[in-house]
Image (cartoon, rainbow, N blue to C red):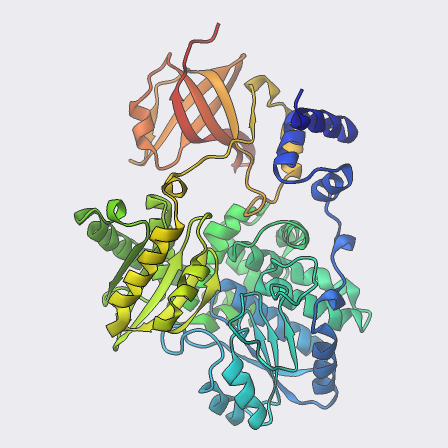
Length: 562
């Protein structure tokens, strides 16, 4: 018996769970009974003391002074979901304790990302005394220094990696800094803002108000694709539960247009329905629209905004499809995916606000890092996405001499360069990729959690699987292998791109779905035997629940079942 087998048996016995569930927990790095209990049954009392975050004490003191003296506070945010919801949350919290607060979100297409010295004119015109950044600012060294000269104090709240220097602000709240001793270093921007709100409200014994913020924290955390472990897991689990009883008029209307009212909201709903609609406003240069949604006090007004966001998202999808098709043609025409480990393309026709989504789709399709550029007025604005084994931020830092500005993290970056330097930049990035990406890293791998027979998929096992939610980065949906299953219905093609058929093993029959894999329908016939790799998905339709096996891979079985 291996050490892993012994640990599995011990954990299964200690927690009274199936060996399969114990194996999955061990695969997630959860090795003790105490760790497993906290993971399976998160508790709001397990979140961290906000004052463990470096800079929290001076940040709270400065905000308290601003509130007491009725100074003007400006919340400066980013235009993505994480940034917009951070703005909404901090505005609400500061207003609730008597602060004089307003906000500013730069126009993605005109201003670009983050705090810039040019924004100080606007800040002066508004007679602002204190600027609090959310989801941005960790590289705003020049802005912070110049703000001092204008008599404006700055508090930075961010979660991105810093540049060579840290802004000399009143306080910098960022768990990602090397100097930070905060236990959870992978918070999203909304998570950092929530810790600041927690410190402010607990100081006034307003603990009961904190749970109301978790709904937005959960959306921002899932949308920003940070690991759903530790505090993030607590935020998302309780936040998603709270979405079932949302009271904010705008949030209710948003959930309505996303068709997720009256049922459990999942991380998939957030990632594919809720977040894209909020993101669409920022991508199309109208981030203020998303803020207005949550501030609307009238149901008719909030409904109108939600519908408008829905239309913007539809428009964004059409533009995205056009760019994706154009980029694919460029790649396929000259076999770029076979020549390069890193795909870098650009066009003056491509919408600057949408290229990041297209880069993500191309990254998934060709399984290699991708940066797409939009060329405008002599500048090249880039947005990139990467595979798990290659740090995009390290790559772009190596080529930072070509950048006017850049930022991000290992899996996603944004940058701006002089169009004249585009070819040099591309060569530099490709040279770094050639030296740092092994060919094996470009082969898509499926990590299987455990081999299982259909007879083990019982109601009690499904209850255990439900305890593993919420799923996302750092806690992916478990992946199973079942060997020698029988295909018991003729595979069909759905909507011209998916496959669907019934499979059977040990007397148990389930529906198998191959999303985006219509080719599988032509590879198998009724009566064939197959080995399948899949995840379990429970769909709710017309009040009924149905378990589906969503396939990751399928191959002919080596031998028929005896």
